[in-house]
Length: 95
Image 1: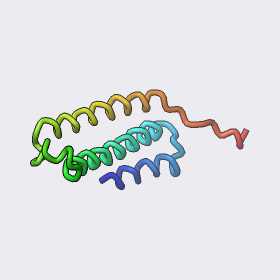
Image 2: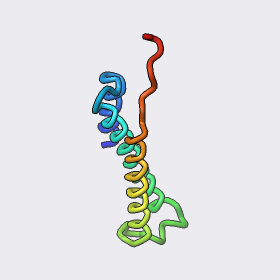
Image 3: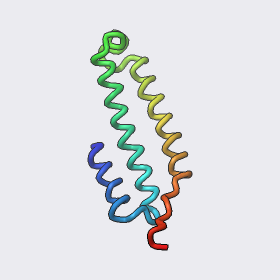
Image 4: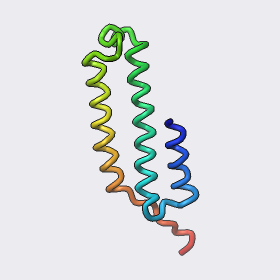
């Protein structure tokens, strides 16, 4: 899923040159793909790390859900901030 979302980001960046709404699409898709990768990191951490494994053996316990919720909130806030502040660099080679 992450690769498909990144393909959309690459299309917005290279084919559409971040013009118009493609700027928002690029930022949103890049943040979403990174969130999915962090979500996999959280799942793998609770499965593999000896310190976290006893806290969430079935991955439905509160520590696991809290970690996922915190990641979602952080990426939502950072994604909105990035979308509002992102400005593509000016191309000075054509001036």
